[in-house]
Amino acid sequence: GDSKNFPPPRRFHRNCDKHLDAMVGNLDALVAMEEESTPVAYQWLLQFMVLVYVSFYPWCVTHETAFMLLFTTAIMSFVYYGLNTITHEHEEPFGQFGADLNLQRSYEYFFDVLAGQQSETPAVSRANSSGHRAESPQVPG
Image 1 (cartoon, rainbow, N blue to C red):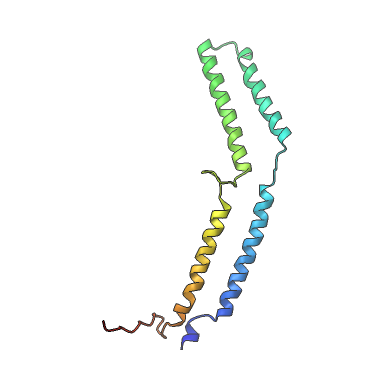
Image 2 (image 1 turned 180 degrees about the vertical axis):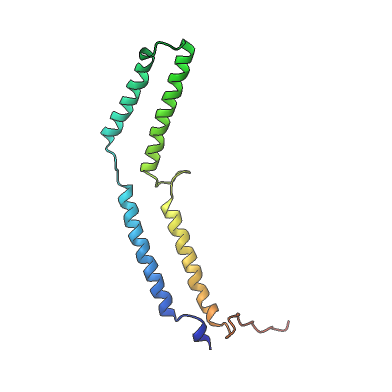
């Protein structure tokens, strides 16, 4: 009958416990990733070194025209500071902004789906032996 087609409720709960334990372990790993990996003093030093390089570049290059030198310096500063900004975003991927991973929203969605699946369990147990849901009786109106 019905017990052959569907797992018992304790197996469902054991599977949920297994997945919840895995989620807690992954959350611990994410929290460890969220901790600051690069000290602020190192970030300031890096920004200062990029500023010094971009500032002294025009004095080191003598074979370019003034317009080309200005264009090259602007492009270099854009690239270096852009790469620096991207690395900061990758070091801290969690937050509430558009490009960030919103962990709270992801976990709320997961638990909503889990609650929806758990609420569907009684409907599944009403299924007949062929695996189809039993039709509800028609009430004459």
